Each structure stands twice: as C-alpha cells, then as structure tokens.
Amino acid sequence: MTNRIQTNDRSDEFRRETLRDLLAERRYLRGIEAHNPLAALIAERVVAAHNGRAARFDFLWSGSLTDSLSRGKPDTEYVASSDRMGGLGDIRAVSDKPIIYDADTGGLTEHFALDVPRLELCGVSAVIIEDKTGAKRNSLYGNEVEQHQEDPAAFAEKIAVARRPSATVTSWSSPASSR
Image (cartoon, rainbow, N blue to C red; front, side, top):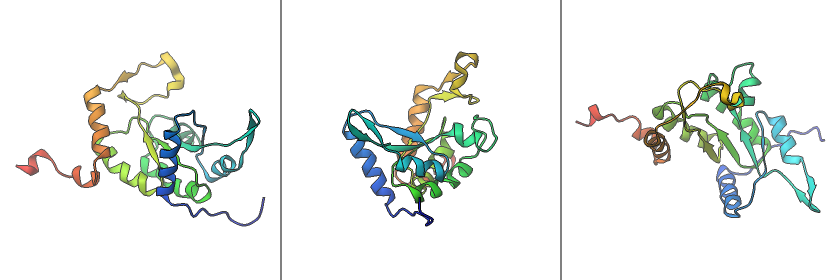
C-alpha cells in the first residue's frame, strides 16, 4: 500500500449509472457493508476467484447496524440521519462503487422527503427503506421483538414523496397554507 492518499474522481452520476447498469444485468450483485473509508478501501481492492473468474464487490452498503454500533449506539434509529450522512463523503472519496444507503424505516415521511436530496448530494446511488412502523428494533432479534408492518398506502406515499422532483419544496407546503 502506498503512502499517498487515494482520492476518487468519479461523479455521483457515474455511480448511479453503474448501479442502473448492474441492475439491468439481472444477476446477483455482491455488496459489502462500509461504514468508514477503511472498509470502503478494502471493498474496493478485494478480488477473489469464483468459477475461475475474478470476483469483486459491485456496491457498498451503508447500513445502520454497523454505523450505529461503531458509535457505541443501539441500532434503533437513534443515530441521526445527518450524523450518518457525515461519513459518506469520506467513503465516496476512496471508492467509485455505488453506495446503497439503509435508511431503516425512513422516519417521518416529511423528514424522509428532505433526507433523500441530501443523500443524493452525499453520493448515495440508492436508498432502501423497511416497511415497518413504530420503534425500530434490529431484525437480528427475530421473533423476540414484536414488529408491525407499515400501512401499505402510507408506505407507498413515503416512497412517492421521496421520489418527487424538488421533494424539499413539496414538503414545505401544507393543506392549510394552500387554502
């Protein structure tokens, strides 16, 4: 390993296009969790032989579990999304792989609509949310912790609001102010 700092000059759009192309191939993708630049560098450089061919990771996963635990916090959506987003720039600087961000439940719909454009600015290629409601509990607990599914219409609305162009503008209007 060299002593120079590795920087990445790939654009965020390049990462998004790469992910779209990978998904269009309709094959299993290999991803690995990266909650800091060291993990991203390892993912960037690891090559393994699989069926006589070189196999690499296709994307990085920014998961709430390791992001929370590395801060000594529980994986219960306790760590603010703004804190989680803070480290994405450092990860992005050392890897040109697409970043998929685990946003847990996405939180309140109004907050999620504001978070998605910020995640795009942080270089995230895709956001995954769970269809759970109530206090978040890590799924590693299995059936020991009761979990409830979000109402399908409310879940669909959360996704729709986040996908709207200029979601930050849309989320500022309220029914009372449009009368």
